[in-house]
Amino acid sequence: MAENNNAGEGLRRLVHDVDAVALGDRTSYESGTLTVSADEAAAHFTEEALGQVRLSWASPGESVRIVKILDAVEPRTKGPGGAGIFPGLLGPARPQGRGETHVLRGAAVVAAGFLPRAQEAVVDMTAPMAELSPLANTHNLVVEFDPPPGVDWAVVSAGLRQGMLALAAQLAGAALDAPPDHEETLPPLRTSAQGGRSGGGQDGLPRVGAITNLQTQGTFKETFVYGRSFTGALPTLLGPGELDDGAVVSGQFGHPSLKNPTYLYQNHPVVAALLERHGKDLDFAGVVISPEPVDQVGKELVCAHAARLCADAGFDAALLTKEGGGNADADVALKMDRLEELGIAAVGLFAEMAGPDGTGPSIVVPPNRATAMVSTGNYDEKVELAEVERALGGARVALVDEPATARMELPTAAFYGALSPLGWGRLTCGETVMRTAPS
Image 1: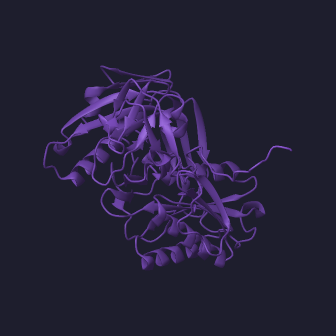
Image 2: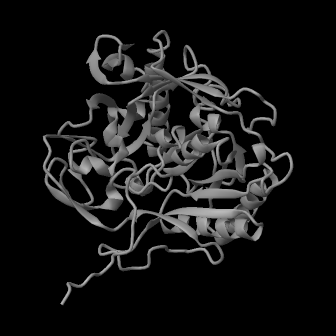
């Protein structure tokens, strides 16, 4: 899946900014306005188990709350019909990450509704709680569904995922003939340091990469890579363009504040930060994706393999991220220790689970050897939500058994992406310094 050492060609993003949205008779993009035909969009959701499908826009600043969010996808395409976007799901599972990809930036396709094992996930589109979820900054085309009684929920999930990806490709296809607002180029991945670590990268710069752990706990809590569940796989090295083109797709609906939606893999913040510094003070070394097994033997196996893969690819340092709660802490901690044993500096991003007042143990399973850790906020801290005018995704918030439009108190854990270990959120934690008044 990874690109060859001298592949030469990176990925070029043709970015079309979405400033306004509407529903209309046909799907089109013109001068920053994305208009969607609800009938055309609904036609992508052909699975009978989904029942009736409804589509609505939720835009930044509107008095609307989206509840029961399942996944979010950024509209992208590589040409008419998708032309290779979301490989393995919309088309053949062929390596992607090169050539041109059209991106509708500022828009997302969002699925919202009930699925088993899915935990309550909330976004407020208006201040002050809009600051908690990055998804409040995008124009969201919300897909709701009403399955008939007795359905196979796995079929519902698969049909919803397929429809969302097809719809995302169609929306981006509306901009194929429009000039991009700007272009962005991703370099090709060099899969070895051509001289080892410790300054063996381009121009003698340290080679720094990312390890992204993917949730792999069975149906409704799994991630797809090139169209297949990553459960039971071994760590794999990818180039950044492969993520851009949808090689990694979410099928995981737990831990909303810690969830990595498909949108986030398409816009991996840690990778973006490393690419921004590529050729300046570091040489970007690629992304290692790794499963998160639930058993200790499996964890030890994949952590050892991930560290060895990083060593073989010439990593001098790695930033590690996770998906999920305490079980996922162990995956990050073990990998950090294995990397440090091989002389590779490791930095882990963790959300804290320190209780509502922040006084409890912050990390369920901390590393034994590695010491560099970044906090993305406290999972248990509670916040107050104001009443809103309308809600999408469901009539009630099951977590507190309140009407979805009502004033309520929720833990930060319920806010979609608020504590993102991939750096998508805006929260962190710090020590409280107690000061006494001068006598």
